[in-house]
Amino acid sequence: MRFFEDIQVGEETDLGAHRFTREEIVAFAAQWDPQGFHLEDDAAERGPFGALTASGWHTACVWMRLYVDRLLASRAAREDAGQPVPRFGASPGFRDLEWRRPVYVDDTLSFSSRVVDKRLLNSQPEWGLVISRNEGINQRGELAYAFTGQVFVERRQGATSAG
Amino acid sequence: MRFFEDIQVGEETDLGAHRFTREEIVAFAAQWDPQGFHLEDDAAERGPFGALTASGWHTACVWMRLYVDRLLASRAAREDAGQPVPRFGASPGFRDLEWRRPVYVDDTLSFSSRVVDKRLLNSQPEWGLVISRNEGINQRGELAYAFTGQVFVERRQGATSAG
Image (cartoon, rainbow over all chains, first blue to last red):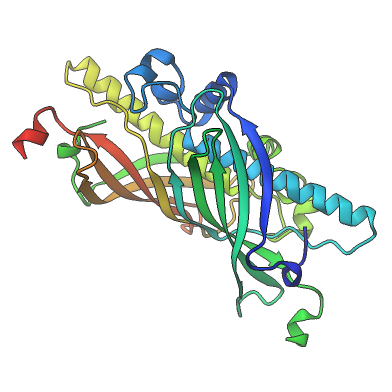
């Protein structure tokens, strides 16, 4: 977890991999997306993918959890080293979220995040906006999930006046 | 839950309202987005919004649950009436998701979905793509959440050959 000035366009971060078990797929769907093809084999066989698949929002939430776990670990490392730690920033939203391929039971997605742009906004002088392209690739090497994210990252103190 | 041919551009559906309780905000964040400002008042006071707020993915998941509840109720009504029921369709993704305002403890969002476009794809002859603009408005009348969704909706049998 770094300050805006320390983040470089082009950097790519490996967020780790996650296996989507049947139990987890069904539990998520029962709570947030109870369509038959996310819950039961019979309904899934007649559904759009012919077998049980994870809710797309489940994939999105797993990405977020891995991203935040990484932020928290990096934050803890800075604190241990006595380095200044930026505040958590909010996100104004996302663009171009693609559920490119279904996520079947026991598929493992490897997630990554690549910085594609950085912007300063006059309306938010203490923060900069970091734009990233994020992907989840399955064990067959296929792109299953992608989106363009945006998050506000704190600028170093004095960065505003120093320009 | 209707067939592609029965859905009109411009239709708006009220998906109902949801109150975001503290317990629910913290439980969702603990599982999927454990940043301090979604979990604890102290961290939230120092965070981007000055008070505890829901994860943006929580808002997204609540929209999805209300949308699916409505689909399932409409599906059950068709089945009871002996009408043909379309299959569930998948979504290729969404665009322009905006977390416009924070969702604080006990905020109530009223969700809606408006059909903004319909498209036929040569690659998916049995399905049509329905594009919707979806919103969540809080109890102060402020737009808190919005996104442009896409979902495949089954065409009536014979619709393909009938043109």
